[in-house]
Image 1 (cartoon, helix red, strand yellow):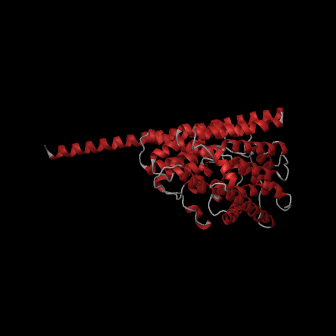
Image 2 (cartoon, helix red, strand yellow; image 1 turned 30 degrees about the vertical axis):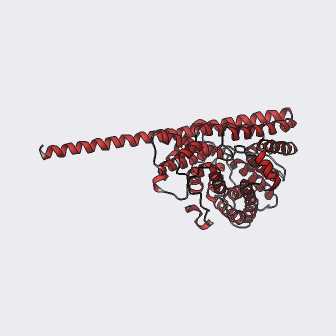
Image 3 (cartoon, rainbow, N blue to C red; image 1 turned 180 degrees about the vertical axis):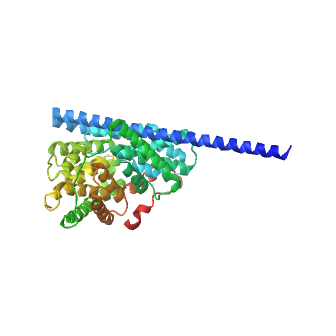
Length: 460
């Protein structure tokens, strides 16, 4: 055959291969983009279901607050029984599960943890917890649900590369935060700071795209709202920065102690109490529900649910809550998490921080009350999650207030430092390690490494 003919045929073969690869790449991109849209849709639907569950609980308490003495124990017991009997892997926040899956190389185990069945159970069991009066949020569960959706999409697209699968899991979790809070920038920072150890070029594009698409989907359905409305408080340099110091230290102490206690409980309670919890987890959950109901009755119901309404009212200055609100809310959140039911910590932590800030504000007349509340919110949230950048961006975006960014960041990093002194292991990392150890996979997985100090925190 003539050499020119061979050259032409080779060129045609190369063109065909390029066209085939290009078509395959675009097909995968369209599938991934569809998955991001689905994350946004599910996040919005989850929010609507959670609001409906909270509304039903409000109607129950309106009939008689004492009804919660029955509803809460039965609801938490049922949730724990369903989780342990049929939906193992749905317990807790959902963020530890997503982090754990980023360190697993056994895709069969990842498929089991991020199964669609578990994700759906996570949604409905979280709503059951909210209806029952548990102090939990939906944002952490939305992270696991988002990770499950993107993992499912990747498997449907034929993704087998472990690095690529991990990238989709990270993208789904970050997209879940962005859609849940309507905070796209916070979703990106969360994906980098909390879910990922480093910002890798080969995975960042997927995460950014998913966050944007899921965020746009949520905005299209719910409007371009801000989670806590608009605030215009500022913290000018000077005497007002005393609030940064006080909120940072108090938030770090309370949030660090909360995280340390949860990490300790996750490793097992010693003595007879631990044996009782192991033998009778459903009965223990019922007792937790009874305590939650008693706290709710004593506090006139303000400790039930996510705490969103209370946090918004405190931040906007539209309502007054008792000085002890943040203490009771912290206690209710701790008990809710210890019960073992599905539910997150994000929204309750924001509410606890707002309550703490509202209490501190009365002692700081030189700083506007709204600013102190925001500083308390970001400090406590940063101390619990030990993710100061995520805390700063979430609070900034939720209130649409850039004037206070520097003060928020200073308070968040101060609280982070204090929290690390009390709890050497970040909460979600510690819970992820515990989750990996209880999966019983028997494989050599690499657990999340301890976080470095605050000077290199963002480059994990």
